[in-house]
Image 1: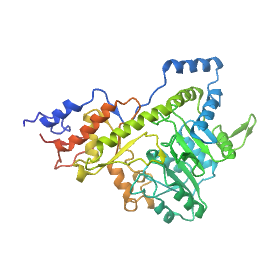
Image 2 (image 1 turned 60 degrees about the vertical axis):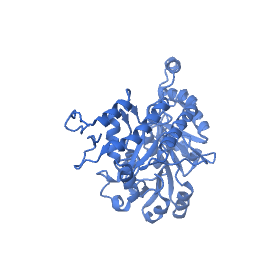
Image 3 (image 1 turned 90 degrees about the vertical axis):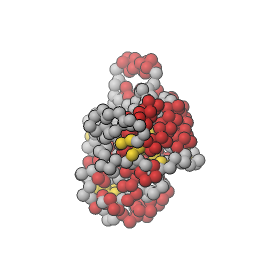
Image 4 (image 1 turned 90 degrees about the horizontal axis):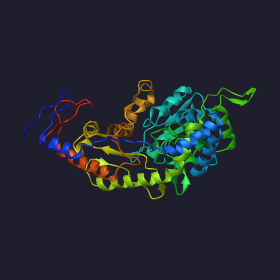
Length: 417
């Protein structure tokens, strides 16, 4: 079959077969990995009118306090403190437990903010490998990393999949360690009907625009005791305890009234949104079942997920395309997945020299970071579009020829007709 000329030096060779696929599957509107669902504008405007009337914009105003109460009730936690974002929430969690300096055992397979917060607190991260059948810290590998300077375990409920909290707590109890959970992805997640947020000493949430529940920017700390909550509340307000009293160094970590109003409206619809996400995830699982070289986690019946992400792993030898080649190719079809979480935090220049950062001692995380791809999933995504993405994933390997030369991530692969 005659091949059409490449459109640019780096675009690869496009065959008639691939052009057929582009004609059939290229989306007119981009499918991003996620997209926020906004509350009705007139309802948000009504909230803003009331804020304008009171002229109370920040400093724990009535809308802020209402969201804090309603969130705690919705999530099934007793003590919750709102913050300006999840990164600051994690700083407050560490400070509340008086963890400054020393070492904290954590995962390399996470968003860099998790590790950067340790750096800002003067803490040395000790990277632990992740589970072979999941994305979370492997409890079987944690204990060997505990040393005289270890202060805590910082685990992440990656993609909202709960960690093995019982095993992690058992290790922490044996060694007198604190446990903090980065639950940025785990809004509303429950195990056996019980919130995952009451595990460990403290958990932190992110309400960034990419998250299942959002306040545009924002976050929260869920606390085990009222005393911990009081400490977080103090820290988020510069350490100021009264008009003429400052108890300790704090930060400006407050959530403002406009964002809190946005969150109150989101909270009214979040359960329905999670139901929609669950249906989209079920379509992915059904349509991709049995497709050689692409694998994904099956949900456990005892867990209530929020379905905020749909990660797959790409096995180049069985699928016929590498993760990076698939990633670049999908973009040509106006499908925009993300390589969460690549690169590993342990490979970032400021952490790569740590003894625990060597790839040889993080084999599972290294493999997963090279294979993972999160597919588009968000409220408002047309189920038919999800089916089309799955159809495209089935057809792409048959049109692909592995190039003899190396292909840079921004380049498209070669194709056969």
